[in-house]
Every structure is written in structure tokens, then in C-alpha cells.
Amino acid sequence: MRALNRVAALAGMLIALAMLLPPVSTLAAQLFSVHMARHLLLVAVAAPLLVLGGVEWRLRPATAWCLFVGLFLFWHWPAAFRFSAVHGLTVLELGSLLAVATIFWSVALGSGPLPDGGRILFVMTAAVATDLPGVVMLFAPRAFCILPGADPTLFHLTALQDQQLAGLLMWVPANLAFFGIATFLFARWMREPTMVNS
Image (cartoon, rainbow, N blue to C red):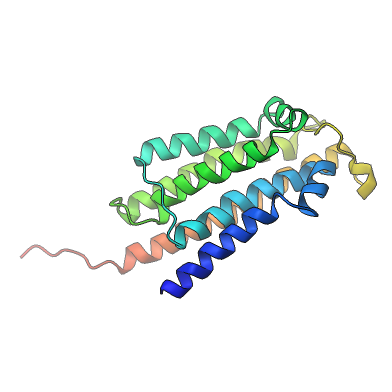
């Protein structure tokens, strides 16, 4: 089991590092959809792998949930991610997302005392709350999520198509990851022995 933990932690670290380096960082400067894909990979892949690898930051579930959802929504506010891009704060943006996602998944997947039923509710409510930016991006009639210096026309996309692709990535694959983890927790919960009163 320890070998698997080390592999998970290493995979999480490598994914996180790849999000900061070319070619991903270069593409993310040109395409908003790639910028959002970085968020998705950090939050829904790298952070859970780090927790499965033994990296845990323990906070109360309500505090962890509010920190994660609050910072996630903040960094998907157009003014926030534009400010980050203009002032060279992308590492802060990505690093803070990875940190709060690791705190979040520490509650959901870590060794804390929260029962699996509570963990499922914890994950599913966060999935619904973090869906909102993706849904808005996907169905908005005009492009409003445009990074400074981005040029989606290089990839034969309009700004609106780039935004819609970002919204789709945030909505569907992100939900698959969250719901997949919730399903794992549900299956584990169902395997727990029930207490029978004598």
C-alpha cells in the first residue's frame, strides 16, 4: 500500500508541476479553455492524488468546504483571473487552488473522523456549487472570459467558442471526477458493517 501511496503522491506532484511549465503554460496564455483545464487538473486530479499519497491538511469540514468553494469561485470571477494574468500572479492563482483543493480532499478522502455519508454530502454539495461558473460560461450569449494577450483565433476558435469549451470542461469532466469520487465513497459506505442492537 505504501508503494501505491508514493506513486499517487508523485503523480499528483508531476501533474501540478506540468501545469506551471511549457507547453501547458504557453497554451494557457493563448486559450482560456486551457487556462481552465489547468484548474480542473489541479483541483480534480492532482489534489486527490496528493491526498491519496498521504498529503493531508486537516481543517474542520465546514471550514475546508467554504475555503475551497469560496476560492474556486473567486478565481473564476473574470476580474480576478485577469488581474492575476496582468500582474504575473498565475503561480499564486494555481498554487492557492491546489492548496485549498488539497484541504478539501483531505476531508473527503483523508483519515479524518467524518463518516462516509458525510463525506459524500461534502463532495456533492461542492460539485454543485463549483458547477456555476462552468454553466454560465457555456450558456452565456457573449464572451466575457477573455485573458489579456489570449488569441484563440490561432486555434481557429472565436473568443465565445473558447469560453464555451472552458465551460464545458469545467462542467462535464469536473462533475465526472467529483461524482466518481462520491460513488467510490458511497460504495465504501455500503460495505461498512452495520451495528445491530441486541
